[in-house]
Length: 203
Image (cartoon, rainbow, N blue to C red; front, side, top):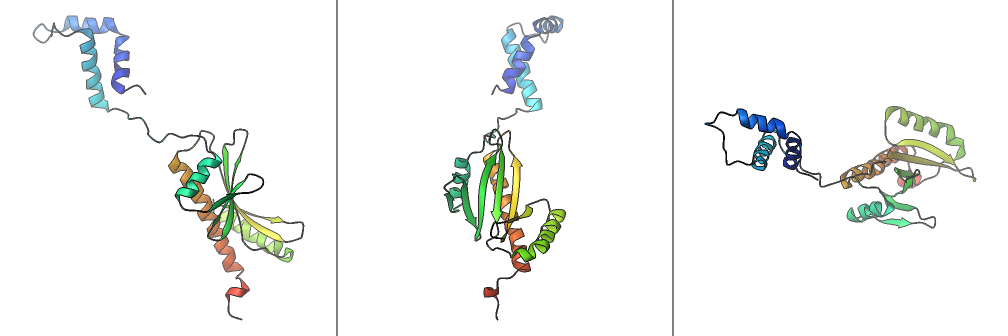
């Protein structure tokens, strides 16, 4: 990336006549005959840089998100992960199963999808739908919904999806992944409170 001083030099170089006229009108007592045009340009550029500041290039540049980057994030944070038979990346977070999907024509949409570790009977479908709707009405993340399996059992799902068309820095990717995992876990904690495990309570 070109420095601010270099850009200022180029800007000044486009106006040689104005610079020459300014030099010609300068009082003889202050004019420095030994100063070349390049030196004058450098002097003005340094003055502008000192007054306006120099923009430093960003070290952490957004780059496309890939399963490899997500897996590296999991490893760096000491989370266990796996790749299933379909090639999808998944992992366990606080005993709950989460998957990490990339959708879209350019695989630019990152989705963190969690599944509650227990199933619910079909007879409770309406009340679970009400619970999901209440959650979605009060909170941005995660989106909560249910899936009814062929065997009639109900699975409850959390989902956080983010469009990363322009890529993401490591810190941005980390924030999205933590958001999907932590908010999904909060929703599942609420389900645990609503439907306590009989084995976890005294008879």
